[in-house]
Amino acid sequence: MQLVVARVGRAHGIRGEVTVEVRTDEPEMRLAPGAVLATDPPGVGPLTIETGRVHSGRLLLRFAGVQDRTGAEALRNTLLVAEVDPEQSPDDPEEFYDHQLLDLDVVTRDGRAVGRVEEIAHLPAQDLLVVRRPDGGEALIPFVTEIVPEIDLSAQRMVVDPPPGLLDEEEGKGS
Picture 1 (cartoon, rainbow, N blue to C red):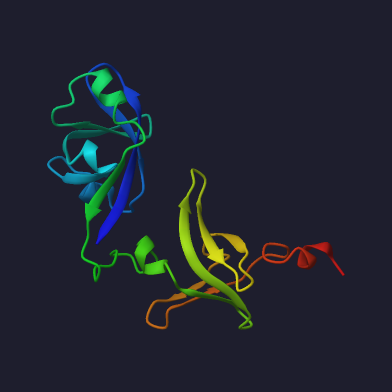
Picture 2 (picture 1 turned 135 degrees about the vertical axis):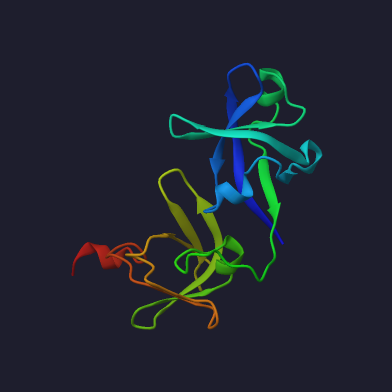
């Protein structure tokens, strides 16, 4: 199974380095020198990581064959994709791969059906679960422990404890 592990940002300097937006909890493993990653769009890759370093809190990578700023800029917005065993799970029991969360049933603590996880949106501040509601609508739920206290992969179920107004507009209006 393929897993997006990063998105290439802008070029850094003149020697072919790029900033990357990390999308994995295991960057030291997935984005290490020597790693060969598929790309989206596919025609750009595969790319082999030549070097990696952290500069001012950002991960910088250089890929084999990319020697200058022009080459680095051409990679901007490319998704870096790693091949992952679908049965593999992160070491931390509180972490999940996107593919493990897709299609989970979402219910509130009191058992009310919310919908199914359709997508995970990776935003700079936090991840959001895009949940398809039974009525065809969509709910955006911040993927944080306070709001998503329980995930049971074997039961294919996620329990949410939304603050007032997150799921229902009427809920937030105070009756």
